[in-house]
Length: 412
Image (tube, rainbow, N blue to C red; front, side, top):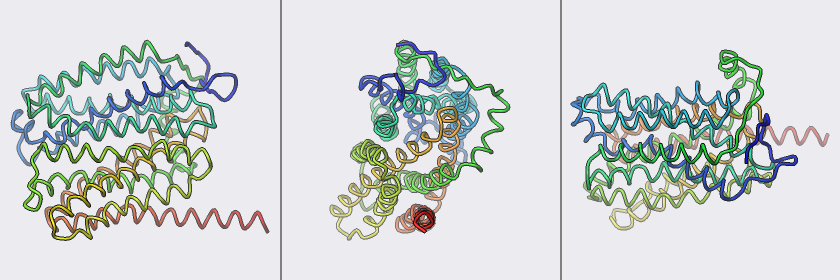
């Protein structure tokens, strides 16, 4: 299967994407983004080994996030300029090299350089998602993106418990070494299986990057979708930052293995992705977005209403984690389906801007969540987490009012 057209679009004579290719892209996205999250539950172990002070331990995770954001802004847009399969292959080779550097790191500077590099290279996943959209017919694009994003979300959710369990039974070096091997194998498989896609954009790289701001200010759909998901992803990041601390605390007394199992249960929320894709394909994006935001709010309302009973409180927390993850999974697909319908020639840039903006929301959520938990406890953190999707819902109300006014004007 080898295509050299500007857009491998299935809307004309090209057949729709195969189920096998969808599965491969979903698995690939999950495995790639998992690299961003292996370090999160291992911060204390890593910082002790590389002699990083407690005050600077957060850099273990923060530099990976910074690298990812930089990659979203300066590497992902290259998907609109360079041959996609080669770009993905090079990014994955670089990611594997950085994971190996992390595995063999014995000093702080070695690991922190590796952490930044892991973030930069892992944006290959955000070149693959638009690739899946290019391969799909318009009528099934939402379902395809939903399935691929399900794999991406499962990678995020699996990374933390898997790295915890592997480190418990060996050490954190094995986590990164094993990940490096998996990524290099994946790079070779994708190079063999992916079709060629060579964009025909006449733009230079400088022009490509400078166009990002113009796309943001001239694309209201992009701004709205980024605002919705920034709110939800902020709440998601806050939740998964403070929940392990609460579960290990005096009320629940869960071990690291217990916390890992809790995180695995939350993966059930990923089932919402393909459902959201079908709703988007059927034209129900606006209503489905409201449901996703309300699910995000419910994920914090439930534990706020929990009684003193340890068992009931834990059960409600499990349900809350699944509901919150469902809202995040659904809204991510709805957002990508909406922006991918704006034009094949700008998909990679739109996707990069979209992810960069809501990842910024995630960084705010995780940072403010730790602060709220330390200063105001579990209840304070939950109230802050509830506020993020509530603000996003207010933005949605403005869109609803705007839509109603347009519809009324058409009838007049």
